[in-house]
Length: 239
Image (cartoon, rainbow, N blue to C red; front, side, top):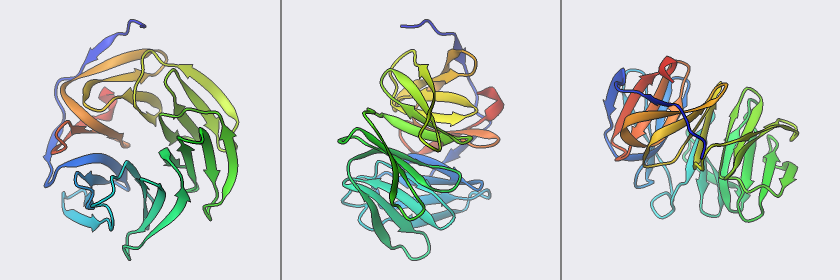
């Protein structure tokens, strides 16, 4: 294992107690969206900390593995495929059938997803039709930043452009389950307290609490604690 410089971060700039326990967090247009632990709803918290619950029909009996947002829709990774939830009407429709390990949205709000069983990365168009397939990839997680798709595997990060061309392969110092990219690359595993960070080189950020998810905004790093009931807000400059 590669020996990494360890950076200790002690104090968040703010702490937000959540009204319900949550398991995942996303941020869109300066509002935080959190997946309620029992999968019944997506909780939206605006800049004034007002809370709105967006019901998820069928979420009670189906585990939601992840979600992402556009202005009018929430995309849900459920058992059996990828689904689209209309924020206004509450209607849910299936847009892809398969074992989706992870997915992300590009700048055109088109979906890129990884199918675990098929070992494929699929690029969908705006009508959710498959426009490109890349085969033989065992993807653990993925993220999109600055016109690049970052695929996390057990041993490396594979970087694609929007056309499916491999731009770069980045070796990782140890296995992690999740990837977040915002200029720098961040890797983590749920229920741990360390984050691997790559700028020019890899180093390790150690928090004084365990966490299950994180999201990076323009100004802050949002970290959901291990119990899912508290959101720690750090300055992005510290990361």
